[in-house]
Length: 147
Image (tube, rainbow, N blue to C red):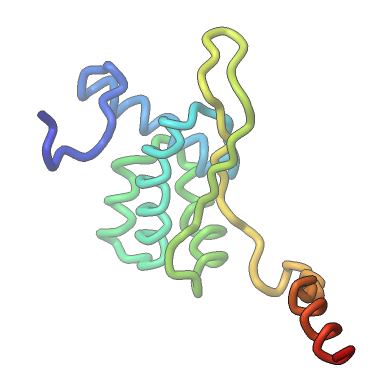
């Protein structure tokens, strides 16, 4: 039994699993959006959100800790410049997983994993929907008036 054991194994050795997660995380930070399987996306999301939290701290130890996971300088620079500024006022929930169908070869469920770069100012205000009255309520009012 796997009581209190978090994380997925992906049928890999610990070294191979860490290398897989590092490469996917590096691609996500560098590109901003990647397409991968749903289970991989759920695992990478934990690491990616932790990296943004480190970038927001912007201390020497936070930079060194982020370098343990990132493999390219491009991803490191983008994390500490772009993402740290974008998510300065946000308290978590930096990524979004959007399911996008199934892979052709093995029918694995696929998803897009992306950083949410839009802020409250850039979002368009969604028009408010008018609430519809219940037809039952309208019918009872009409019958009460008629009587």
